[in-house]
Length: 142
Figure 1 (cartoon, rainbow, N blue to C red):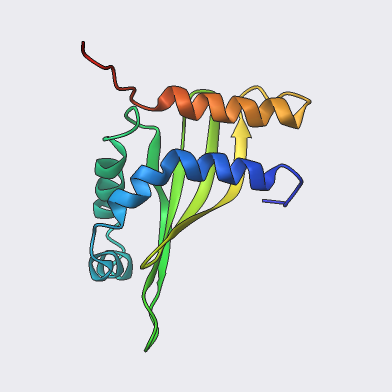
Figure 2: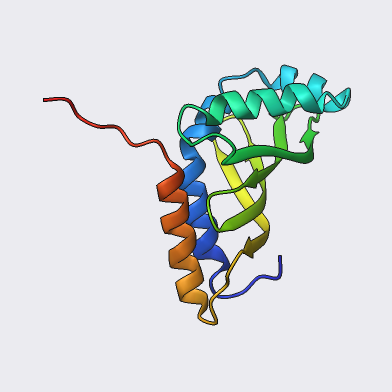
């Protein structure tokens, strides 16, 4: 994605939204991710992402994308890179999730709004509302 003044804000919105999904995925051993990526077991990776996302989002909102990668060097902790597609109503976000030992990060490669506004700030606000609406909400019983 071509970096612009609102890219960082949108990445923060997406990162905040999928933080619990990344936390769930970090519970999986890095060696398992590496094996699945190395042997191109995309269906298994899609199942793992779907299982982590179903706890927090409506079905079909967070999906495994077209691939991923890993970094594994002698003396360094492994890093897992997973392509994700986020599809809340009205927008599709293509991003790469980075999972590391003590952190996770997100890099957006493209955002497609179904009905984009001329105002980028309106699009950013729509992205935040759309992701928020796709989350499961918890009701408190009295």
